[in-house]
Amino acid sequence: MGIVKISDQMHENLRVASNAMSRSINAQAEHWMRVGMLTEMHPQLDYREICQLLIRAELAGGLDIVGVASGQLGVSSASSAEKH
Image (cartoon, rainbow, N blue to C red):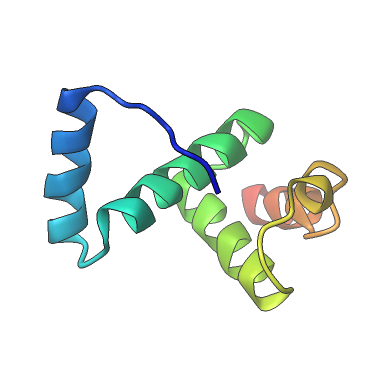
């Protein structure tokens, strides 16, 4: 675990969102980082598909960037099946 420095405005955004979503500030920040990371890795996926990917990752034992990058969570097949 480490320390990440963010702007005061981003911290305020996190505080507001975390209250609205009933999450801790750290949990909200981690959620946004996961979604952002997966969006960069798989720009063809929409938010719903990203959330489904996160659920599958959790059921498989947690989000592992190596597994996501190698497609072990079924990103390609799920995306192409839903798009057609």
